Length: 210
Image 1: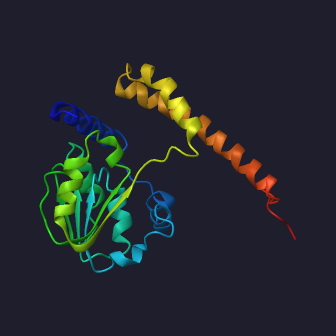
Image 2: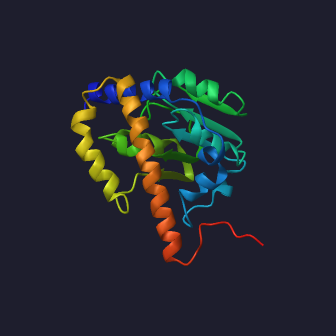
């Protein structure tokens, strides 16, 4: 991916954080959601007292989750112009240093853990970022990456591919409105599937009364 193309992706994400930068409370920034990224392959309790970085911090959601485990030092790397949103959302996080640079450019060294959750797949040529991350890890340090999965999301991928040629033509504000309308249908689809799953597994969705 060319530098120009990469800059456009960063710019687009910065615009998104400017529109949707407010962090929702509850599950969206919870310990449970953070833990769910890893299953049994990684224990987040290892973060406690360690030097940690987050590549592609966006609005600060992952930083807030990492902070639950009280790292000794935390770095947030975010290259977009939405950096001011990130700073505002994480102003209460202790031992945090925010860097308004790209993933292949940061240099802090001796990190125990580097996280990049839901970011790397947006970079068509992620190698420079991955190489730089590896160079900033101490011996035995871990780079923890989470990517969007295709398996189980085939329907959503199909809808995305069908809609993408049209939504690319829309201004951000109109696209935001359309997305809000479509999200209501997705929520209903989720609720319907949830009830079907519970019914098929013999679990009632109606609260029991005594």
